[in-house]
Length: 233
Image (cartoon, rainbow, N blue to C red; front, side, top):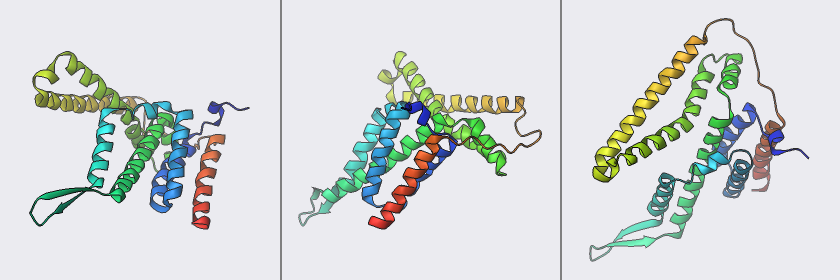
């Protein structure tokens, strides 16, 4: 029996996974969207649990509560000019659908940013004539975990100094400025490292990354989902 690591996809599988999540919420019916969401959660549990652990944060919880509240609450102006608040079941379902879409894209982006090497993405883009695009896209996706790490470390440092207890608004400004400064420094380091290694110069090579068994699994699931949706519904 093959281990989960042997079924892990390569760059093609993760590209199809990202594209399939976005296209699925546009073209597929609600039933297949829910099935795809459950498949994505199961896939993340097996291959990339870090993508789910990053979701258990207060900002995401606040985002979920906000989306459900805004979509569920229906405001009406009565005859006495008092504001009436009604809870609409259809609004709750709409909020859950929006939340499912946001969480799915977030998980797919996190998986792509962690599992896809920048070198493979760069070589693939160069091979199809899009020189430089793969490197830029790979660095941009790989900055997502970096942003999360920088934000957490900076927040912890400000908390240890007691800034959030004394001046909460001022501490929040300091936190955002510190994140921006560190991201600029990190970007400058990446560019300097790329120039040192001769990125963008020299002879071009047509290199296509290897196709893995996990790539076939993801592509098959996506194609079957679209075919069944068009046939059954």
